[in-house]
Image (tube, rainbow, N blue to C red):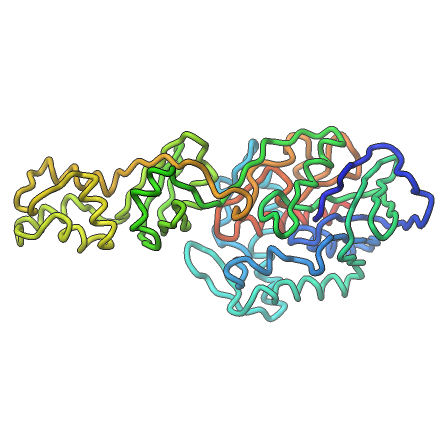
Length: 409
């Protein structure tokens, strides 16, 4: 949803001309906004859903490599990050992953579990978008695309100034997302509206995002670009055991995207590059069987060759395996399974899948997502300070929070 250049809290000039009334105005035709619109319209509300894009559900379209990781079987509050992790429980418990799965199945969309409870379409993401568009049409939602918002005001009703004219409604739902992927129009509009109406915003930052090396580290690691391993990555009390990918800029892959939500500038990551193995034990056993092999070649049987070379170099391991004491083997194993690296930063909102932080939940009602201090104003989806793990959690928060607000507006 494109942001307004100057949001206004008083009367908007020209309000008297071409004023159109509705029961509910929803800003943002993404996952949360569409579900909210459907639920509200099914309850007999006249709903106008606005987005600046030419098509709804753009994040749905690109998600999961085009197959949409639409939810996860293992939804749990500890898998969401927020100043108040329990805030999301009301919506998640009332509209669960099983409710959305039933919705998908009723639409005839085939799906499969890929890994760790992650559910994907057998076909393509456009099936989920088509399902939601069909439900909106059936419910009578007035979807207005290519429509930019330039001002929001409140004087009993909410007044929204758009490029196509003035709109008015007693309920306004903000579902414009966060700042991630600005090329799709992300702008932080939701945060500006929140501040305009006196709500606090928890500091925002890119999440589920690749991390970058320092210049020196990038030069040392250049030969590893494209190497992927199963890894366990930890930081600030959190740890994830999934794939890790070395890139030309730094580190990516599911384990890195997950830990990026817990990492802060200056923090080090602890990385086990051979998750699930005991390298020290394997090397000791190999030393007994065939100790004349070089350390690098012995490691290459356990790790990708370029990575084995890096580990041997980092441990300053020279000579054959037979030349290594148990203490030396322990150092080699630590270089592979206790690597500490301090990223220089992240790739930022350009590639971040979601935005961490957002509208402070302290100012919202957990059941309705309505602002406690501003009757009729609701915030849902990524705009709120609720950020899920990688793997369908953020879509489930969008469906659940959209549904919850849709029952209240």
